[in-house]
Image (cartoon, rainbow, N blue to C red):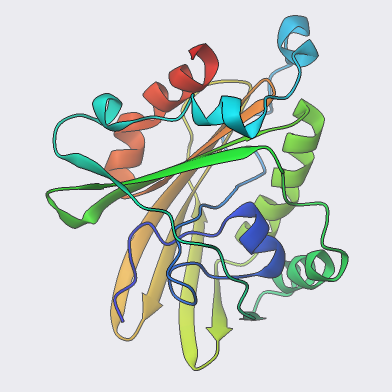
Amino acid sequence: MRLPTTTVLSLSALAALVLTGCSTGSTTSAEPASPTTAAPRTVGSNTAASAPLSSAALSKRLLDESDLGEGYSRKPQRPATHDDVTVIGCPALAKLGSSAAATGTGLSFPRKAKASFTYAGGSDSEVSEELYSDTATKLSQGIGEIFDAMTACPTYQLVSGSIVIDMGTKQTAAPDLGDEQWSQLLTYAVGGQRSVVKQTAIRTGTILVVLSGAPALVDAHLADAVQAAQAR
């Protein structure tokens, strides 16, 4: 099976360690967590005091085709499923997944919106955006737990049914946007095929912007995504 370049792990999927795209074919996104560039800057009083936005409000701040440029089309979202996924070779991630699955709380932010796009240039030209909103503290803590767990092991495996996915993670530098920044490269190898996905997350006040997909596309559209999340 081909592993889509936008196959990523969402907050809720990470909590249950569900590999979207391989086990379900859905296109949700992952949330990193521990700043990869420098210590987080202090959030200004106006930003810190702003209330979390609703999912409906977040959906209006997503990028659209006009933001991305000619040749992009929005992909329909598929309903999420919750297949069992086992982690091999990464105790930190396995512990996080089992704990979250047992409690059903702690890592999933209910206020969220998502959009995925594909480019006419081919299947390797895909990008996915997710927006989350909560208090700045909850966003930072929740993402920190997940990203720390994901990057604790440079290589590990995910097993879903008869599918074995070789995973690799590597922290990368994130641009100096927003209040906190996280970024990583995820490598997926399954069935003799390999894909690389870049995930960069920016927290700006009570909004978390996560862009995932082909590395060049993430780099190209990140600043626009943050600006749209702040201004719309």
